[in-house]
Length: 165
Image (tube, rainbow, N blue to C red; front, side):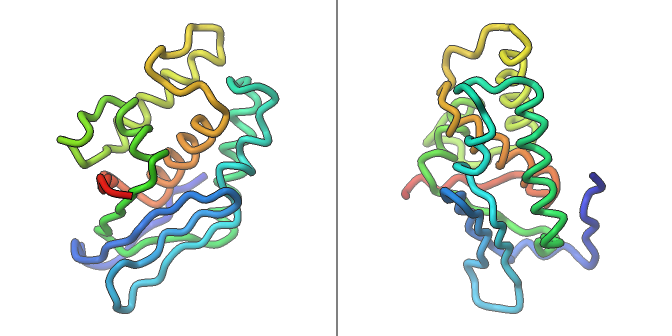
C-alpha cells in the first residue's frame, strides 16, 4: 500500500490524541483549529478476532495488517504535516515499555522502536521464542499491529506517550 502523501509546510503545533478502542480508532485534534481528525471503524477487538490463538500465525498477521490498511485507505486518513500524536492509554504505554522505552523517563516512541518490537513478536509466529518481556495476549499483539500500521501509513514518528491516563 502506498504511503499517504502530505503537502504543505511542517506545522509542529498540531496535536492529536490517539485512542485505540475495542471497535474503533480515533485520532482527534487536541487543539481547536482547522485540523481534522481521523476515525477508523476498526479496533483492537476486530483485529484480535482474526487470531485463532494469542500468538497469531504469519497468515493471521497479514490478514490483520490488511484489515487496518483497508480501513486507512477507505477513509483516506491523513494528518496535518508535522503533527504530534499523543497517546495515554495503558496499552500504548505497555507497548512503549516492551519496545525498550524507559517509561516514565522517556516519552517519545519512535516508529523504529515499534517496528523492532513487531519484528520480535512476528518472529515467534515463525517458530522462534516470543520475547519474554512482552504480553502474549492477542489484545497486545492487535494493539501493536494497529500502532505499527498507523505510524507507518500516517507518518507518525514519534508518538508522544503521556504518562497519565
